[in-house]
Length: 225
Length: 401
Ligand SMILES: Nc1ncnc2c1ncn2[C@@H]1O[C@H](COP(=O)(O)OP(=O)(O)OP(=O)(O)O)[C@@H](O)[C@H]1O
Ligand SMILES: [Mg+2]
Image 1: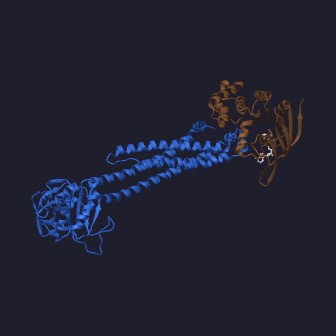
Image 2: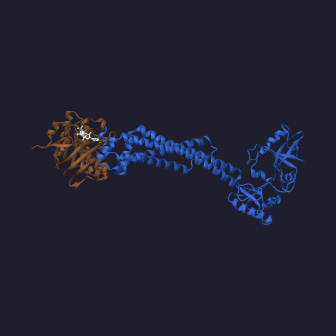
Image 3: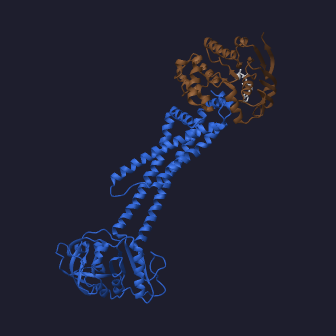
């Protein structure tokens, strides 16, 4: 469902050219569970941002569900993100002044979903993530693990095909990190494609597929079982 | 995203940055309030003057000898010597239906003396109707009585200052004064007056018009004051007056008629311009508020960079981001403008209480303009920050913590 062909991404810093990604050929099947690993600066985040249509490759083509999405306009990529992609970030990125339920509802609000449907879907998602009693709390009244669960609720409330998580446990203690990972894996069990960027080899080992990036190139691509 | 959702999001955002919001509202409302209060003052002054003029009689026509092409200007100094404007011309005007009073005026200087005391004074010859036209009040005695205006009975009415200077503590009524080479008896003393159309009524001696003409050895009147019955009669009366004069002057309407209305209109224009100028100055405060809104919105955009990145990541197209930030600016300026309007009205109310004699009130156009400018500047100055927000690169926006 995701196919990258000859993707390259270069950054120009002053008169220096940084090649963050070099000629990446990669595809993900629907329902995949992949971990992207590699040393710092190897281009993991850059790759994930391109897959998530937040960033554009300098070279190459990107096909999402058969459609070439490389050259879509900003408005069009926004609607693809809205319908098909859910993001989970290391720093949660919740809107601080909104309650948990309003944060979760935000993608539906932007999409113009009617309020009653919003409410029922939000409470359903929050309940399934064990946050029903926290729905009216603001982010600063929640623990890190709870915040990340709210962020996951927000990422999944539009029923996307793909969940992209950049270091989702990077800011959490081991225990809540595990919880968050279990939740993400549970989503994957129900058919969502899950791509996780991580430093942590213990987390990487849990994925069915491990992609090793070094210096912007794919070094390893292992499938378990 | 529905309108309700946009407004809801905006309200929460504005509540989330309370100090900023309050300051913006303050700036905007000060701008609007100052426009409202200052124009109210300007317009109040304008209406005050208009009322003063009305008290003098807006139904008044002033006729002077000699033709002038422009109304309100002085009669021509050069060219044809104008025909005299005689007392009989003036008396003929009494027969015009729309006319209420006709007061002929002959004006000149003469020496007035009582025993050893003397001084130069302004002598105004007229008829009893002058009292009504000018709305003069009497201090003592009576005004001139001229049942037959063509008779020069030796009577005079003197201003309050003249009485003081000539008679001091003595009784003035019934005394004889010397005016130039003639004598007249004091029959009345004017009450203390305000200036009436530039003439200091306290320092004047009023005599029957024929008396004055003889004193100055003149045929022609200085002015004729004609008061129409109502304001609506003024224009028709003016036409009739011209016709009568034309008939009497061998087909020439060689007089100039100034309507009090024209004088009033001049004042009105001046004060209106003044009001506009003051409103313009106050509008600068509005523009400043607009710039302030832009600044604060720019700060808001950089403060909320991660939030903007997030909104983009979860599928907000650039247009939606623009809408969200513009609606913040618009809501700030709308609320600020409404608050300012309320504050302005309160100020106007207070001023009206403090100066009940001046009709203070902001004109509608000023209020509408102030609110309009507030909204337009708010939104216009909101565009730049909103577009900057919409153009942010989501990756960079999200990577900033
Ligand atoms: N906006 C940018 N401008 C310039 N260079 C950039 C930019 N974004 C990334 N890079 C460079 O691209 C390379 C890859 O960065 P990337 O963030 O993808 O690394 P990463 O693998 O996610 O690292 P980390 O594990 O530290 O998050 C790095 O050398 C980085 O300096
Ligand atoms: Mg990274």
